[in-house]
Length: 220
Image (cartoon, rainbow, N blue to C red; front, side, top):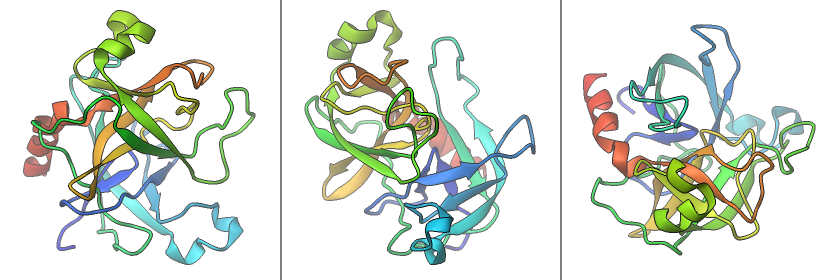
């Protein structure tokens, strides 16, 4: 790439393209707990060996937090990470398409989420292997049956079908296929405190926040 990319949650995005790239941030103490680097291209820990040659450790130049994020209502739960150096696209690292504000993803559409979170709510640690789950989208009316007035227009729900996101998955992607390409529909935000697979998980609805994303990209 000609310029540093930006990372949304755990998904790289610069230009429309197929595929997705979950990435994992490493803890740091640079600024109020913000991560100092991101790793891409791996599905197993580096000690496993098989993914080591594909791993890229990328320094984060700046974190952009949505100024309208509300810790109480969890509205606008999104941030962008600007990478100090470009990532190298490969078979294990590829961009994801961003949705248009007018894009519609109907209830019942089966999408996918990935993450390194717990496989059970009472697990003592997060997963050592990247997990993936297929789960259907719900309408906000359906989601309100689980969560009531907590659900707003900047959220989208998925699951309640035997699988769910869990603690440690936050920031990960919810992607759906549109016109043959993977599109970032949601970002793992919140859900059941016991990771119940019979209750929908809640994701940030990316299409509603595209104006802020575009404004941030244009200014940086």
